[in-house]
Image (cartoon, rainbow, N blue to C red; front, side, top):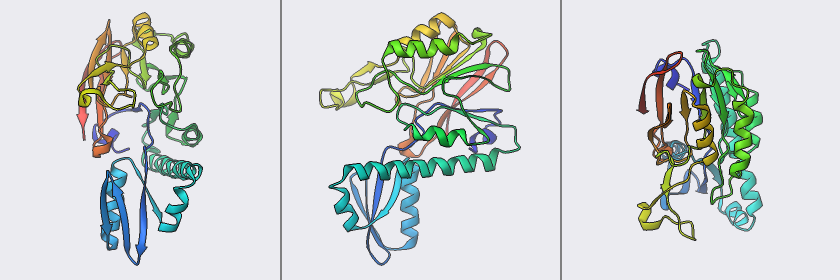
Amino acid sequence: MNAGKFYEADQLILGGDMTGKAVVPFIHQGGANYRVTLLEQVFDITNEDELTDMKKRVRSRGYYPYMTNPDEIAELEKDPERVSKIFLQEVLKVVQEWMEIADRKLSGTGMKVYCCPGNDDMDEVDEILMESRTVVHSEGKVVTLASGHEMIASGWSNKTPWNTHREEDEDQLKIRYEAMTSQLKNPHSAIFNIHVPPYKSNLDEAPELDENLRPKMAGQALKAVGSTALREAIEKTQPLLGLHGHIHEGRGVSHIGKTLCINPGSMYEQGTLLGALINLGKNKVEDYVLTTG
């Protein structure tokens, strides 16, 4: 939420996959002692300062600290449904905290945050976003930015190996995109804020996986996994700008015809915020820079 002010931006646009991927148990060992396993490394916490630091470390990687005890851990190992409920509970709690921070920091500034949950985000996230005063839930909508540019937005992706919350076949994505692009008044000056990158754009290259969903050749074998429906929509509409994510390794820029497409990439597990600062003219991208912070 501080990025807009830091970079002197007028608007903030988020592309999806807002939520973390895992809960990290902090297992109480008695007194001030906790045991934590993070990235297959075991940490023994012995005082309050260490506990605070470890919670911060876990959160900086996009994970959720969960305070528990050995008895509950034993129960959870036999009850995957309860584990899922705890994960959802922690996700929604943090999203609610983020919305409160956004409203507190951005109210009265004139800055809006445009976002749509990504394919990894649960449906329950949407309701919390829609309650915010400063965060605009943009999924499936055509919104007009303060600059006058129209923007379409969607966090849905084409099919993945992981059966995520918001993914569908390419023909369904095509219908989804056409429902928005058909409403554009000035398509050539529009922005496509679409979580998934277009197919074969060099922004969509991810490690090719084997039948066990493990990277082939230690992750050196890459495969284009972007959306063909999105590429078709961009080729047909030729918007001014495409903003994409989804593929963490796909950081970079690409042109499809006259459209500049950007994927800032992601390094959330290293606690690093990647982004793009873009200066828009009426009918052209004046300049841009990929940011790391």
